[in-house]
Image (cartoon, rainbow, N blue to C red; front, side):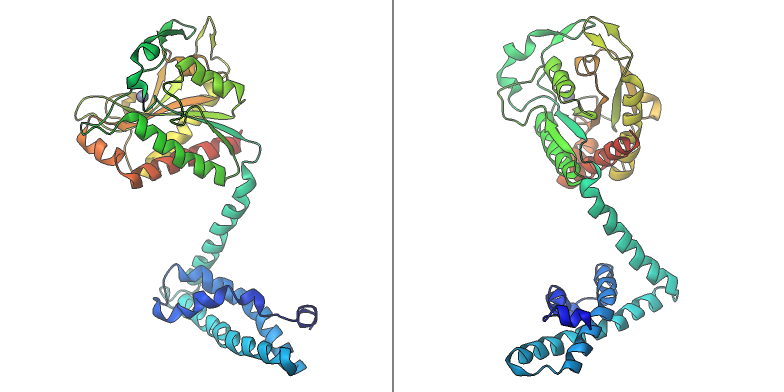
Length: 343
Ligand code: ZN
């Protein structure tokens, strides 16, 4: 009663479902997509029905009442049909009511973390480092300049590799970085890219590391794809080795970076369905290196990921697929999210 009394238009809340519901008959009744809607409608039934009955009891007369009754008459049948659909789904799912309920519950549960997930990484900073730069090749003198990486001096940056058909590593890394950024931002994280195709070359590897440090990043992922021999396939995650020389001191980040790398490797395998490298890492998908400036100069947890071998035609078929790159970003995102929740 208070519902009807406090809200002269009790059926408004159900309006968003009306257009969907009107498409109902043309859809497969047991479509998995329909179940969350069914569950949602079923949840609305008591309130909506109560409101409708209350409205009828109050006598929907007068000018406003005509509209109200019309809305009520329209909404009530569709609402009333929902429980039947729900019961049908539940009852027919292998003849096990629990299965139907379980599916509904799972859908509802699955949507819950997505909702709460929007703020779950609030305050967390992730720096994504898309390897190389699409126009590095036009600035060979600049990228060949040596920079100090603590343990020695190395080139500022390299052009990166490409597939045999010319899809460059820099295009690949930027695309995956954008996808990963979106996924992490959806979780509430603050995301920064070291470059966004918005500069002529670089940054140099030392600057790439310093960007993560200056951002006080909770995690940094440098995205790459390898240029190995034909038949060499699969991804690997590169972890920082313990170095303490010159400006390089990774001792504090070795352990957390390993945690980050392991989580990413696991989720990357699952999300992409691809196997760890068959040419480095002994099948673990993990490799430790002490010669990369981007890792040596990092003071925050950081890993590289070589997503596959651009020079192998089978790997290249994956790397050039947008759908696969989305899976790759998804795997990385899941690993990063797990790491951040544990830290
Ligand atoms: Zn690379």
